[in-house]
Length: 138
Image (cartoon, rainbow, N blue to C red; front, side):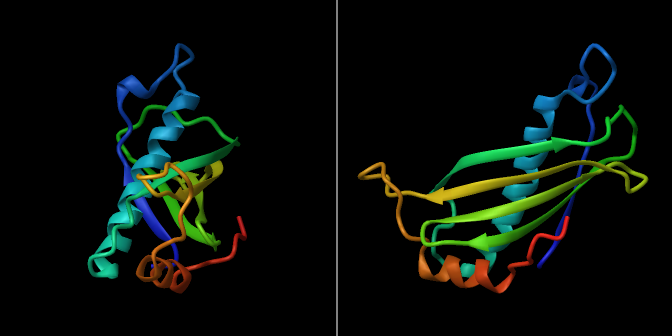
């Protein structure tokens, strides 16, 4: 599961007035890929809740415009770092011909709902995340 490619359909509503996929829509593409990645993590942790987390940081470098096409965008997704209470996910947003449209990263932080503060990553979740780390080479 080191790199996990996720196909995301393009929609007409994704476009801006110039006919490009709007920059805000990239966040939706990243979210879709991250949620699918987390579902895979949840399937492997055997009961620990990998969802008690928030996105604390998002960075996107827009490299090539995406246009409306019938073919989906592919978001190549992987875990690149695991800390005490946070971990980093990297993304390559690929057009249907393999052109890199964007590079991105998000930092997710686990939290304690009772205190609203950060919390250590649960041990079963940490084990899965650490097992699939792939250093950033994008």
